[in-house]
Image 1 (cartoon, rainbow, N blue to C red):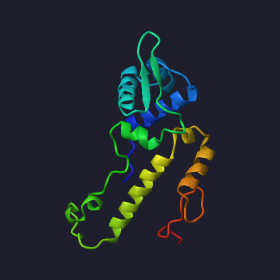
Image 2 (image 1 turned 60 degrees about the vertical axis):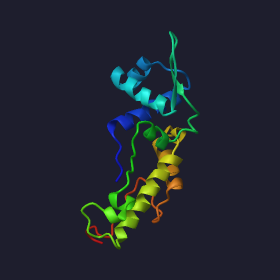
Image 3 (image 1 turned 45 degrees about the horizontal axis):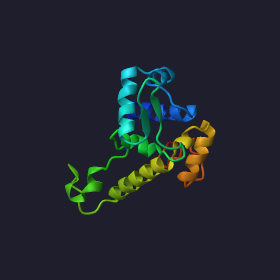
Image 4 (image 1 turned 45 degrees about the vertical axis):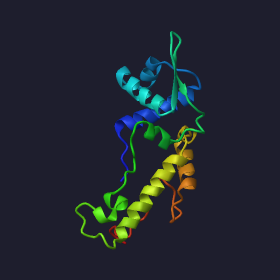
Length: 168
């Protein structure tokens, strides 16, 4: 249900790198800091610029900066700038009468689960800012728990108990 490509992950990391530096960085500096080929970084920065996430400064002393503050830019905004949808619609959610190969077009309890999951994932990506991602891992887990609390009260690092697992 959730798909994050290598390019999307790299784009988020480039934005985090710009946020961490707090200053203008060149394409070469970003490529070096993220250990990525310059053509890859150039392509990603072009998409991020067109998506309104970064700004390009042309000229001899040019480079890239964030188009907003790390608190204003969401992970969802970065992913959308690459033209992707990390939580795409399941066919039966978009049009229940055209559920692909599924014969259950009248009533299906699973459709509600897919719809709810999609809404939750997209909401979490919109609420999670670049500033959130710059926090150390334990703090990010705590912030995610605030944004999307687990019903069992567990932490986001601990897998939820599975009623169908052995010994249950």
